[in-house]
Image 1 (cartoon, rainbow, N blue to C red):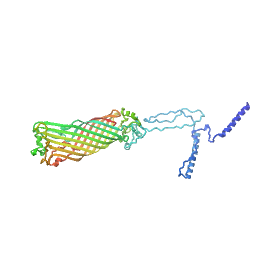
Image 2 (cartoon, rainbow, N blue to C red):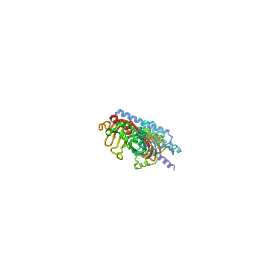
Image 3 (cartoon, helix red, strand yellow):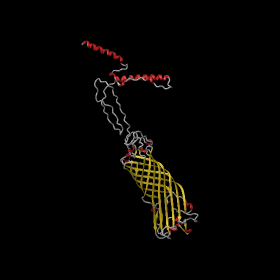
Image 4 (cartoon, rainbow, N blue to C red):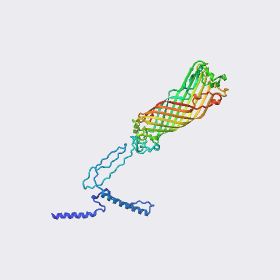
Length: 530
């Protein structure tokens, strides 16, 4: 038995002596395994050299690589000796909500220690950097930062989408944004003008007013406007086209009676001769058995403007990228945003400011007629006496505007807006006195007939004020209502152009375009994606 034991020991020692020389030079026993002591491959012979690299540079590079490799091996061994090896325990992370962003990951916490003598690599705690604190409302892409072409330059505070404090601007809205917008309004307008109390006809008996300019003014007539537009440059701007018309129809005032009951309020009509010089316009109206006054007014306007939503950090917001037809459902949801979303404003801010620059054409057409029935035949015939004045104003020019919206609640908003512009006004005035067949004249018939058609270009101004409320029905539609005022100065009106000076043809042909006209009243309408 003892001999067998000695034989087994001798065999074991022999095997040990044979295996030991076969081990590699860089072999390390399991007790010394460590991630900090991994073999480093010598890349000194693989230094990349271009054709222009000379021998000296290559030699220096090779030496530097060798020194670096040695330094790495030395550092790994030092760290391995000082490392305290423990088994990685189960970790607990505390999720942090950063306004809808990726949660932060806390440092791992060791919950138990490994068995004594068990040597394992020391785990390295990896702390994940939190994502940007920008909040992204459902429906917006995170692929691209919006840096605010206008708002960033004007405001030191950058904004978020849903009002989170601080942080960067929101993500760039995708191509899924609904680029079209529009709206329409019904306007219930009244007319105001200087000289509205001017007398046209008076009673012979006491000179009191029979017909005034105010009697021919339209009252609370209905007009309308509508606009369509398209958002540009990811919602920073909008190209807008608007049309407005107010056409209340003809206003008429009749005064039947007896001859001599009425006379014109314009004494100068005595110098406008009729019937071969035997009578005058003043005498023909004074002898009429009935009088009629008519007025027809029409206002229309076309605007082509570029809206800017950069002020106060506002811009349009849309649906996510690649949403397909399914993204359209955001446009009809309740509340804010979506495919027909509201504008982004500064973080936590209730105010949005939109500015506009553009071109406007404003036309005012005004016609007035005074007729006298001389009683020879029933009704107003060709041999009765008429005075007609037709005025047309065409204003062309630049217009600047702005609109401030203040959110009273999630759906209710207060709107305050204004526009103003300077215009060149092409004025045309046509006047005629006499019967339908023969014109009145100053000194000789056919030489200085009162039948003129004159034009001139003058300087005019136009302004508009708007105060109203809006209630957001859903992401697409908003009900709006309020008060609107449109004022034009430096224009010609028919009542303001009535002739009273017949001293010369130059006086008859003169253009007087210094009147002011105001249209004002309430409105109600709908806005889409605005």
